[in-house]
Image 1 (tube, rainbow, N blue to C red):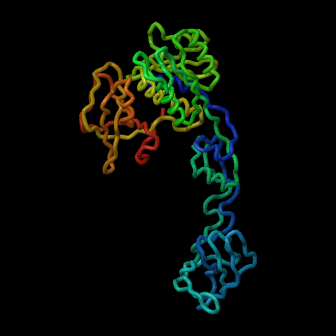
Image 2: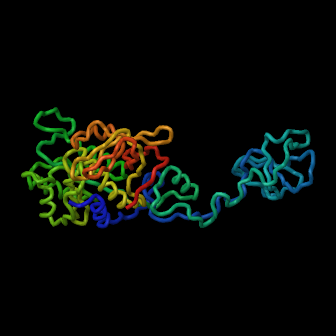
Image 3: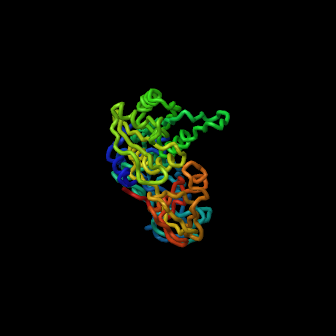
Length: 407
């Protein structure tokens, strides 16, 4: 068996990054920018009013009344210079006329028969967004490896872009194996089980930004396994679940090798998820995961998700971690590091964690009741009140105070 860290390094050393494609802005949401983005011009392109009010020159001699000589709504310009002592009514976002350096808000003025009167002291230069205040031409605004969020889409649109180069989405084939499996929606059968793994793994792939392709269930024969693996390897990545242990009908590992695949490791020193295999077949990464539902999902978090993120251009590929105080003692009497499923809560600015009620690798409630993983080393325990590092599983969990791990 190899360590979790060794397995991660082997995987990430063998996979590359997908090609780049140019897509419309809205299709880029959640994708990764492939090339640094620079501003093509100053933003704003001219001095703009930040308020509805009156544009004036602060250098004009002090006076009681300012005649209003023009009106500049948003989207138009006054090209004639405004003389000192004159005012131009201006709307928010409109270009400040030549000769003016200050905008007086409407609420700081009152109307007179001859114009306006200032009812508060003048603050020279106020309420104007200067040319280039936000961005200067050739500023670096987005770096390669950045994720495209709604705010990035808005920024790109403001720079005149309608498309952006991002890394292609990853197509991930998901194959379940085993004669005991029934398709979701089938009537219960006491001798068989519903195939839930394909759906949970597909959801994990979706959450990581990939495109899952469910290719069904392979019967427990070498022929059926080979046929399905041949289908799955047409995608960018293949995940199998089940058939990777040492049983008489566990054909996945040997089938990959018979097809010319390079088996890079099998068995990782962890619980749950020890019988994990990683191979390269036809230049594609193949993850052969256990059949137990929790073991399969934990293996995705540890190994598959970082691979998906690296292949799609992410600069941060490991799940975030928080430091939490344990609400009760946790113990690992086994010979392997145990990834305990935990429930982390935030109260009064501090995180607290407690193990979920079940830690069975076949029981999905150990994950549905929790939102994190605690790595507890072999033959060790942590007492109640200890501080421990928890890997956060939930997307968007308490994003403040989170530190991102790196390899």
